[in-house]
Length: 247
Image (cartoon, rainbow, N blue to C red; front, side, top):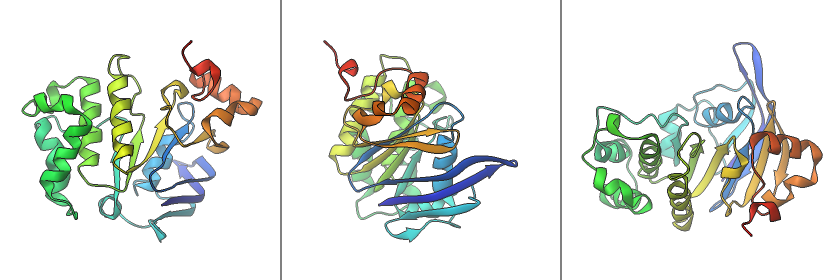
């Protein structure tokens, strides 16, 4: 579905991504884990057309995304929830979630797409009329993901969906991700804290200083000492390991 090969990106003369390659298959949940500044957000913004690569290839369903503008990439079937959430404060929750249905057509009706977003995050039902500026950080994150889902995407890019949130709200986000996967959407997640990687993740990439240093099953990441050092630096045990499971 999504294929990124040998991606090189510079920002203000500094090389941020150095030949990065990864892929996300249909129906998969894939996580990109790395410390702050490792290049996760740059990779996501490059996929969405907000950063112009120096070289490399970004393809979605066999077609190149290079040179396309963000709205064109969204219309190809990629939804994006940025780290900052970017919920519109002057709009209500209902308006924020409905916005993609105003601008992008789909085989599904606007009502179906919006209803799916509320099924994933039912807590938002009671906040339909609340303004975006009155939401907590966790509520804004839910709205941001729900809005991306209302696009009716084939693939969702979620940048730090649980970063900085109260531990009380994180399970609701994770449950939402599980529901999105169950509905057949692919999900690509960037996380700085490996402890927040969902247990149902299919594959894991670890990025360090703009390079992929591990690609494989989450539970296999601890076989490489260099990867372990990065993982321990991001905090928490790997999902799928004995240390990650409750007694």
